[in-house]
Image (cartoon, rainbow, N blue to C red; front, side, top):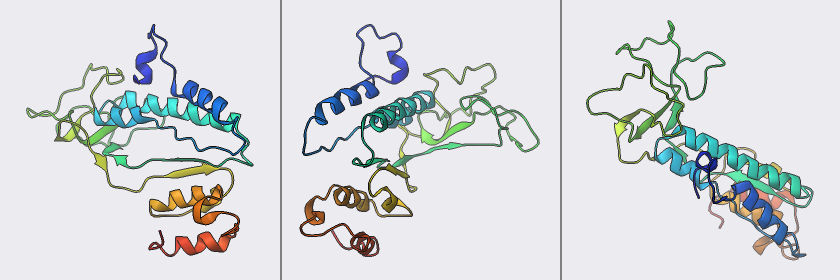
Length: 224
């Protein structure tokens, strides 16, 4: 797929991730036994690796549109929708920009931002990636940092920006969504989805839905 920003003038008419989600659900909801659908907003990841924040953020919007399709088309009394990531990125906000500053813009000068090289910098920065310059930081005066192909500045030179190491969020709606509260190991996500769908060791016949069963799993990370 292309970045969502690159489809604006696409004469071939590549479908959006929301349109593909719509078609997938139109097919899968015909199955009386239910279904499992994985929708991945993979271009978010690639946009970050390229250090092109505009592309990454606009593909988050495209992914959000796909989530909205699921919430509008499905019965949330019967469907668990889970949204998460398998990793973060070296992506962050720097400085003390006042409310209303464009997210892809320059941080305004202020007493809170004592920039040692005296040059402007963007709201968004990467810890590593292709935006590093061996000769020193680029002076961004007059640079259109909101351009979709602008490469954000980074602190460490790398061909591609890398993944980060902090915890990622899990958002959920539908049956058993409340079990995602708090901090969990990554394998816990799969167990909740199986539990909500009464699959595997969580089938109704062998393990009826009780909060006790999942509580035991949460506090025994060795269980697989």
